[in-house]
Length: 370
Length: 70
Image 1 (cartoon, rainbow over the protein chains, first blue to last red):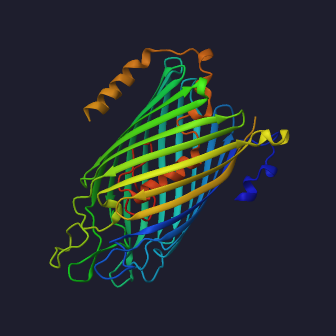
Image 2: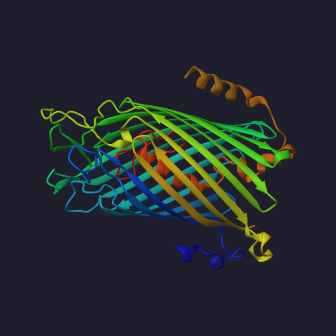
Image 3: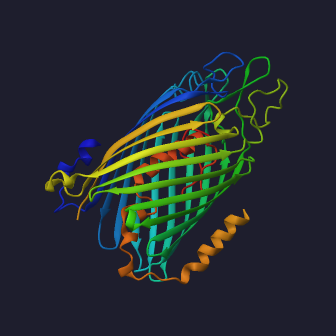
């Protein structure tokens, strides 16, 4: 991937590639959760993991009317869910996931765009395919835009018995999502966006290798309702302050679903130009969510087989804080031959109130061809 | 929720305001894009989706496509 995306390999004179981007991410996660069996009986188990994640993006102009965006991603995860029940596949202990996504945009008219999306993701125990279509219309002399999209995701994955053996029949999950997005220029220095998303999921929604502790010892398999309705509404605004060479951005998102999870998320970013070739950014994100109605750290021994249950810490009541910093440097400042190449470095710290923390960083570059 | 709806209505109602192309110099700054860095946005979306059971509202499907239940 690195060779394919290296600046030296690109041919700005003959290539249809208009932009490409390469980024390497590294995550160091520590924490505990009751869905993990990697701990003492009655206590939350380990969720420690290290994740290496290279990502590549290409933007390609096929013609004046057709363009493509291609995304490739690789996740290498150690101990995704230590000592879970899939003793045979190892899918929860060491995971390599590859994803490929292609998005093609057709300029139907000067104001209208049609976009098609297709994606495939492969993990050891999962194959996911996604298709989507969206339409966008520019309004009011390009001061506003409205877009609607519909996406479908089909996941097929292994299921497991409590003894760790793979169940012969694959398990399935479908996800259908409709999104409405609006953007509006509010002034020569202000732009705002609003989005609403409705997602319906059906099939086996529980993580196949997650378990839930039973009072006084033992474990159930995690079980979810067969359908989940999810609503999310977001607002975002960006304000340029030319005198300060600063951009302030802020967003808010409200989420509600049929599992009784309600969430509020707010974030702010400050981007500051450092001379003509560098931009520094600091950011903070705050997330608050309520627990799923069927979440508990432990369940009674006499539960009905089909009764929903989870001890997954991701569905617990929690606060999450994330702070980050990023520096992007245009390499044209160092040498004229590197004009159009921007290198970036970012660092984040993510901390959850229910015992999970992630330190992560990414380094990469973007090449833009004239 | 009422505040959210009021802000959405105000945003939609302001669509008659027109900023001419020659006034858009500052809007063209890379930090004024919907997603200034697409790869970083993808990376952070995945991190949050995998650790918080409440994804969506960003033009993407809320869930699916991974081995986790979020």
